[in-house]
Image 1: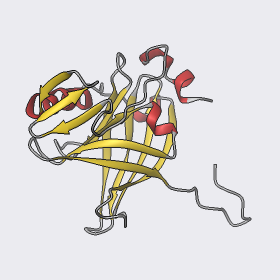
Image 2 (image 1 turned 180 degrees about the horizontal axis):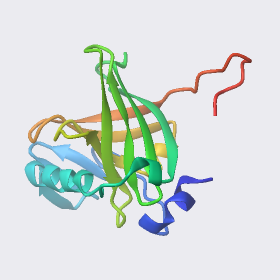
Image 3 (image 1 turned 90 degrees about the vertical axis):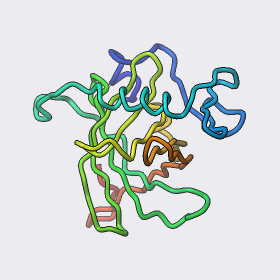
Length: 178
C-alpha cells in the first residue's frame, strides 16, 4: 500500500516533496530561512513553527493505532559520510510519526515522536520528551531512498542532512525481511 493512500485523511491530494539548499523549496541564508525562493522567515520563528508541528501529535495508545513502516535511515552529511545516527520511522493513518533514534557514537537509543502537517505534507520528528534535535522533511520524501532534511540541533543551529534508506537485513534463508 502506498504511503499517500494510507494517510489520505491527513494529506493534500497532490504529493509534496521538499528540497533543501539554495534555490530549492527551503534553504538557510544566515539567520533566515528562505521558502520557495520568495518568503523569508527568521530561523527562530521557523524553528518554533517546526516544533509546533512535532508537538501537535495527539496522545494515543500505540496498540490501538494502525501503523505503516516508512523505513530505517542513516542520517548523513557531506562532511561526515560515515553515519553514526540511525532513525527508524513509522506513520499512522492520522499522520502521527513514531520510531526510534540510535546514535552509535554515544551508544544511545531513544524513542521518536512527531507529526505530519496535513496542509503541507511536512514530516517533523524529534526524540520523545525532548525539544531537540528536531528533524524536518516531507512525508513523500521518506518513500525515496534518499530524503533531504533539515536538522535543528537547537534554536540557533540548523544543518541540511540526508536520510539514506538502509537495506533490510536478509533473514536466515537469504530473503529480505518484511
